[in-house]
Image (cartoon, rainbow, N blue to C red; front, side):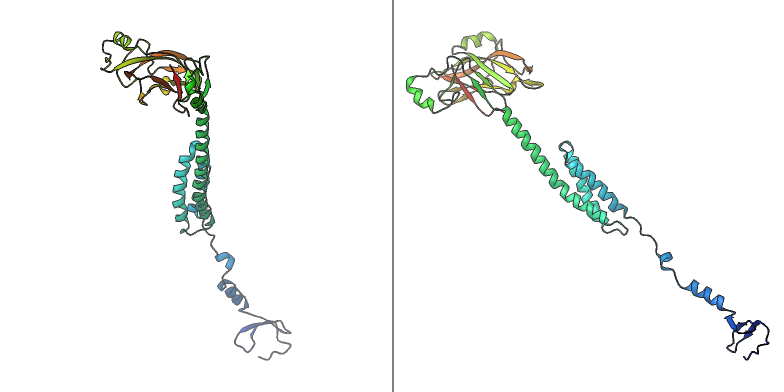
Length: 304
């Protein structure tokens, strides 16, 4: 369209088939320019507006928290079993979490690593505690001997052999009255009566009589408890070893004596003196074998 300068301002066809603004001097914007801008703005998606936030991988989060708790429990001796159980469940949960969609999937990897490392550390802690307990028990079992004045009175013919063995061995037994101790117990053999058959027969009518070719010997001894809390004297063993090498216990035959030592219980400082009968073959002598507590590392022999 040809527009003279005297054409008033207004909307006119500029020859392209579209309406365009004429300000009286020159052409301006098209009439539909605003619609094009609106269409363009509307049709082009906004990347920031269209991106949906990722969901949190809750399973991974739970597995990581559970693994941390199990790891701590596995490192504490009193809760180590509970820690192993929690870590076992966490191991499965962590693997499952890796197949879930969502953010923070790395938490599942953390849970998986802790569930593997935790039991290993737990085993190390357990072995350390067990080793410490065993060492403490062995220390409690150390046996010490306080010999009586009668010790060392062996025959000259036995001196050389006895010298090769420590006091309290079968070859070098202690004398009656010697103290045999651990950290928990002290045992003293007071006397041995080789003629105990009549005493056993008089003590109770139900006592088993000595069979032909054998006799009873009675050992009197004192037990003192020095440990913590309470304990039964059943932890202490006092037996007879015959010259033929056989071990005879007081429980081999049913015999009751007036001063029996049974399953009495003692607290620290408590002491008990009593006797037990042992059936010995005629013609054999005995040594008294003392084991001062179940954890004692030595057997100590006493010569009647």
